[in-house]
Image (tube, rainbow, N blue to C red):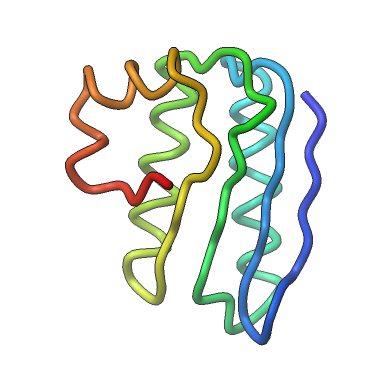
Length: 102
């Protein structure tokens, strides 16, 4: 999995990942995003671009849930360009009820 993290605006973080978000990659993804949020004091908006994610496992779903919980305490999180197959997974587990998906 390739991962790109870029600050935007005054207090935003844009994350773009590509490839599979399976067990091994989801751990790396979650760790890097959480570390960046912690190291960059004041991040209050997280945007994750799913445009190049080809698969998400249940562990990947868990990581997205953890990031949502983290951001809901001091900001917001949005998912963009979510492929139809991954969107179906989000809907199946009810994530579409509370995640902002654009």
